[in-house]
Amino acid sequence: MSAVFVDRERELEALGVALAAPPSVVIVEGEAGIGKTTLIERFAGSLAEVRVLRAGGDESETDIPFAAADQLLRSAGSDTDALRDGQHVAVGLELLELMTATPSVVIVDDAHLIDAESLRALLFAARRLATGRAVLILAVRGSAAATLAEGWLGLATVSIQTAAGSANPEVTIDGVLEAEALRDFLYTKMRGVREHAPDHAADHATPQPATASAANAEGDEALALLSDIRDALRRLEGRIGTPGGGA
Image 1 (cartoon, one colour):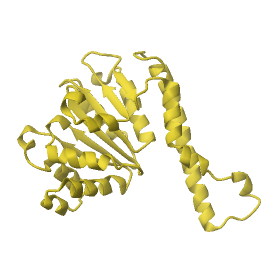
Image 2: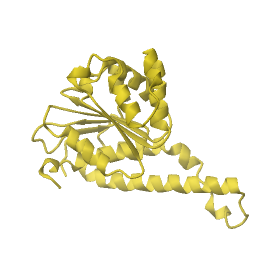
Image 3: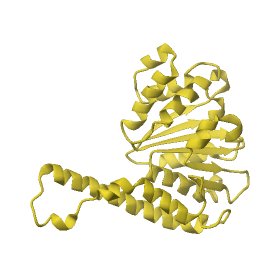
Image 4: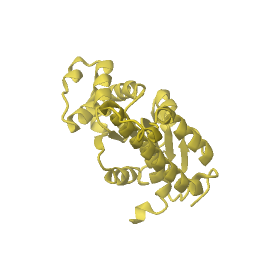
């Protein structure tokens, strides 16, 4: 593990939790040069079978409408016709379709420099991420409260506040720091899947039609995901059992 990742396991675990319980919005904030981009890229590099889409803010494009949205659409090879009308709703719907069509992690780096129109379209899409395995990560220089619209702060399920030289960054997941509350949050998100889990005891009694077999397979996948979440929470307990606690 490189030097920049010393004591960064806690942030990586938080990003892992967001991926385990999508859809999620993650905000990573902190001053320049403390490793926000490296953290996110390290996380993205560990992903398998997940599409990663990227856009980055730049001062030269801050005033160009939908410049960042154009980056995201092009990175996925998607049609950019929605940009021509200049309507944030149309662009937002296109981004929503892009994020939910397949399991995706969308990374928006230097979000404080993203053009206002793209941020508005992304916010429109993020507010409608009711289903789908999508994680939207925004990295912001300084304070997110000072640079992002209030709507983003209300949507964020994971907030990572880093500081130069800090071994104990503040990691807030859906507004809670206690591991037990975090467990309740994740299991609540998955409750609908658990309630519809198949009864395997009955599988051996009666042959199941194809549709039932498919439902059983989906239930098995959901239960496996819950097991992964449980294991991730066990690893997190030692790190976030008490606010500000170290490893």
